Image 1: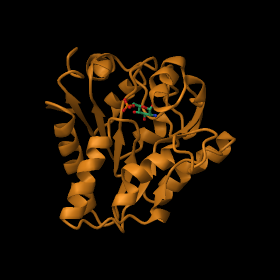
Image 2: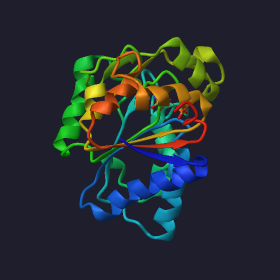
Image 3: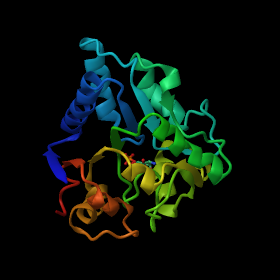
Image 4: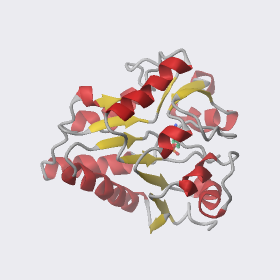
Length: 240
Ligand code: GLP
């Protein structure tokens, strides 16, 4: 595991965007796995800035997002579909048909598993960007995680509902379920780039770096992946 320590969010975004854009510029048909949450926003901002100033072409790029809230439509401003358009897709020349996000209207795991088939049909994910839940979740794979899971319908735990409530008008509005790429789906990516910022992520980062592989900290499974880079700020690194 490669650990890159940075001073702050801006530096994390600079480094994260460099790693992603390196692939976009140099690979013929790159397939990116993308994440939502507040953490990747600085990375997306830098991507937009460099894409526009350096005229970087996204027409051959395919993306797969990690997750979506169950029951939310793409038009809902709390949906991850809406988030991705607002934070990234609307500002770069990516083709809408090349962007994939699990549908919030999926109602069976059989339907959800098709997302993994779609990823495989595109040759797999070259680089998966990940944030980190305070409880160590990746995507919406809550503890105790099923390390063999494919994309499926998942229940959100109380602490996740509470931390994500800040984006909604009230806690009761936060969906209690999501469609998330599974742990096995994530581990199938050729490279993984995880970004964690702030003190609330320090415990999960300590487990990821120094803990043992344990379903009660889902992120620890990444120790078994051969190509993981993590970008962390000083606060997230404070318990290492
Ligand atoms: C949500 C997302 C995760 C994300 C996490 C952390 O639960 N499903 O993919 O990593 O939030 O969010 P933030 O980056 O806002 O701390």
